[in-house]
Image 1 (tube, rainbow, N blue to C red):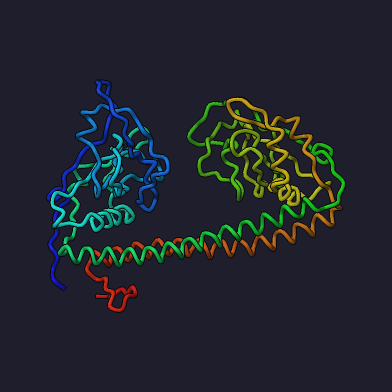
Image 2 (cartoon, helix red, strand yellow):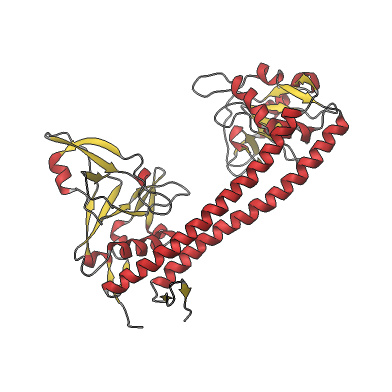
Length: 411
């Protein structure tokens, strides 16, 4: 293999910072590419491009050209690094790019193919290289642009760049089809369980009782104690997740405050907690260990011999129960379910032995669907790793296609 030359990005590209709307006329209406138009696969999503009135003079300096690469240099979040890149692939219309982005424009298009460069920079992003070039301020990530410009890009002859892009496109197309299939299978596995769950409670011919006729129903404190670095966990609706409790982002209170709130709630093993406020209201989880904590904005359903608590949890997770939650929600800054509505929750009540049978059936089906979900989630993750591996092989000069099919050649 002929040795490829390598150049720093700033040796063969020029850069422009994003557009501010400005206040000096004349103005012009233009489409502005924002971070929200970047997909996780570094493709341009033009379904919601915003159109703004901007200074004409500012726009002329920042008008996008076909083949420009737009770089996300600010934004992101704790788990979302910046550094995504998309290709501007439009030939008609007036478009620019926001001040959270920058444009990378190749100086000599006879030397570098913009599709090839985009795939190189995409690899820099998904491999984590650009994450090391980031600073954080007030929850926003900022790319250290001077460091980014120093990235070295392998540059084979232009025909070779184009050949590599062609192979990558075929490989990525096949990977995308496989990922779409795996994602659909994952969705089907989840829907299978949810459909069965819904069917049980829609088709059962049982008596119905209010929740407070079966067991004691309370709510947590509505006060806001002083939080400390270590102490007693203080659980809110944010700690209730689809698969149980999460104590990863928990605030803590003193034992003195806990005693004050604990006497109100008295959470014990086997109780069910249900969120009463916010977007996840109605989400429920069972207390399955002996951890001590206090609760806020959370409904407490005490364990009772009158009902199988796992049966009750399955019912609360069903779409049948969620309809009641949504119907009984009150508006405001955050929608909520009041304690009176929670106590009046209608619960279908088969005999205890039948409840136990239902729980066994649902446990068995859930175990099987979770196995399927694990298989499909792993396949999706493996496909992402395959994409990264193919890119790395491509830019090391190890990607060949002798018979029209993808082949990875080892050194």
